[in-house]
Length: 303
Image (cartoon, rainbow, N blue to C red; front, top):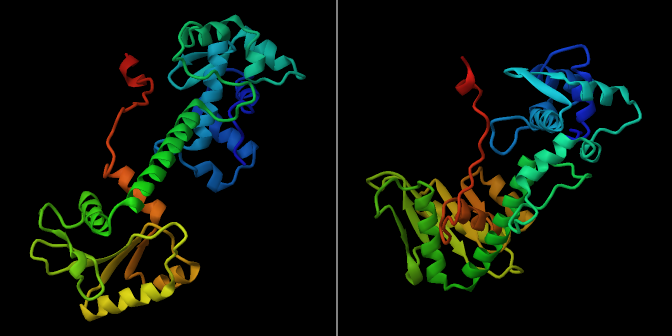
């Protein structure tokens, strides 16, 4: 199990006990010392730019630096200060956020970003928190997306069947299916067409097509294997190689198994998957605010 960043504070100090330490090498040393599995060592943050463990090691060092227990020496390197040496010598001390509160530098660091008269300031960290600020921000974003997806799904379920069919076409076009042609996707409407509700052209001439089945169901009305087989039959009649089955409810386990046994010719998208795709491709929602995560550019300061 990957330890939280507070648990890594003492180990980060210990790695510099003999002198200057490189933070990337420290991460490797601690991974081996903690006997992390290859999967844990390679687990990435959602950004895909840094491993979760390395991120936590770096945050541990950052907090220690802001408390004055370590100082940067050159790019990627740090060493203990006198306070850091003293803290490390206190074997009984649990070095965490609560411990860092004893240092004026840490209190001053926190006060710079959390003014008492600012009612919009972020919720202060708690001493027992285990997530880094990066992880807290991403977790908050995930909760916002979950709430938005739930609202979108409620709206879609309340819409008309015709609107739902057009929505699926709009979403698939937004995802890049059908190329750039406005005529690449179309809903078939109430007339239907041999058991399908819509079609997407995969090439400009419409030689290769993806057929769509759209079921606007309530949450409790699940889709069973019979509906999957019927859709497969419709695809066979049209000699189509691919199909997408979308529902606002869910698929039973037997329906999922049936689609798997058909060799992947039918892609299943349930209600929550649909709503998340709508969020991702800005269908039925729009960006309200963009927050950019930025990091220190070490190259800028290289002489």
